[in-house]
Length: 114
Image (tube, rainbow, N blue to C red; front, side, top):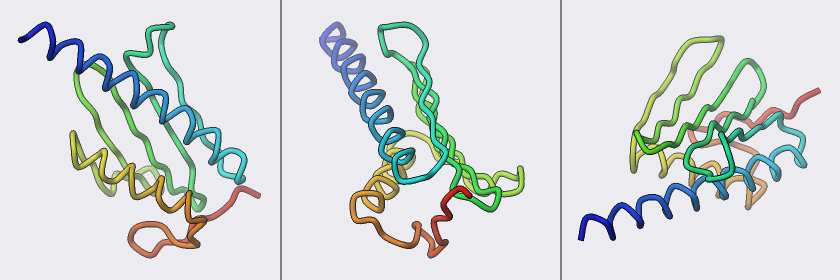
């Protein structure tokens, strides 16, 4: 049972990393500075970042050790979420990108890079 759970977890992390890479590409194409870095070819961890303008930055980290969403403005941490809450917040961002919505989660406008 534990070997199966470990395999499922590895697969989950790999799927999440692939989706983060795709989200970074879409955001870049829409004019937002975004990146997704991974270590090695196994895709067992990633660091995703996007700038929403006006010193508003989102950082999403995923690894075997955990998942975190950190939102910052003017180099100050506004919100930090972990686990399922972090993934839910990432889904909100992805939904807004899909819908090309003019506002982000709490009514803040998505600002394109100049």
